[in-house]
Length: 226
Ligand SMILES: Cc1cc2nc3c(=O)[nH]c(=O)nc-3n(C[C@H](O)[C@H](O)[C@H](O)COP(=O)(O)O)c2cc1C
Image (cartoon, rainbow, N blue to C red; front, side, top):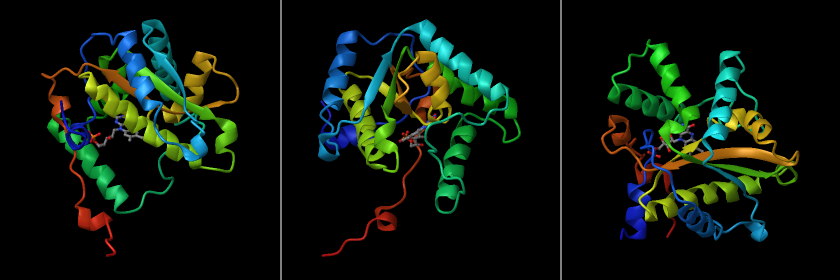
């Protein structure tokens, strides 16, 4: 059994999965654990659609890809990425993208393969279960606290999944088409999609799953005052 530090430091986003479903029992264990995530005033602002129905996942993916093909850049409830990228974040984003494409030997100009790799998000990288995390629009109307809580909830899901040998990939790509997801799910009007997490049994033979982007040094982000 990994220690907590090992669980945190060995988790990484996986982008190729075996077509092996996750049992309902395990999904519930993950969700019950994640439900213990702390939240401001114990608001528990996360509302989840845990989807393993292949048709529903296909329909969501089809609808998003259709939107993309129609030239719709986003159809979202929240803007996840900055409107204006600045350094050091711009540089980190670029390095992370280049690292992945270099590993996969995809040329910078090969837009067809790059687009296909992005579309893989909406084919859930072959995984059979995706958790779509919504919050109540009322909580993010002029406030952002629920986003902090739901971010912590995301990490809880991924770490809890690790206990069962289940890997994951958080997705902001679905955030960008949150309204499309809500529409297909016929979600109540008061809900806003924040993100999704793909969950499954990673294909250990897939090269893409060896990708582990490095992190900045602690000195660059931490100020100790003693
Ligand atoms: C909120 C959030 C959204 C993300 N969106 C995507 C996504 O849409 N597609 C994807 O392949 N990876 C996505 N990622 C994964 C990041 O690229 C990844 O976490 C980062 O590069 C660090 O790599 P690691 O998770 O393997 O440690 C997302 C991660 C987070 C936390």
